[in-house]
Image (cartoon, rainbow, N blue to C red):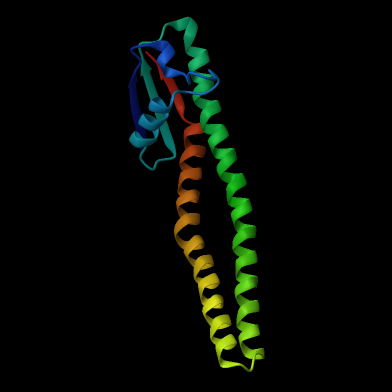
Length: 149
């Protein structure tokens, strides 16, 4: 099933980022991502762009989503290391809990361990999954078919 996103460009220049025309504007980016439905076959149909200017808009759409995708992949790799280090820190705190003889220190280490372990689980389940969903969306939009009328 194809997901068709219809775009009517009223002002050609407003389709681009005001500071760097390699990127599409924030409003166009937000519209495309809002209209996106999970589908491998995305078609973006654009009207209101003259024939000589279509290639530049096409390239800006691809470039914008490609850069977003690359940023999410980098962030995800960094976040994997961050989660791993937090998990190691949580295990270390649990181990320290067993070593200490003083009740107060044991309790502090136990609470610290569970806080760190919970942060790892929370990041993995909620933040990480949201990023993976967005990166899949961006990858799909990189490969979208762009048609001009």
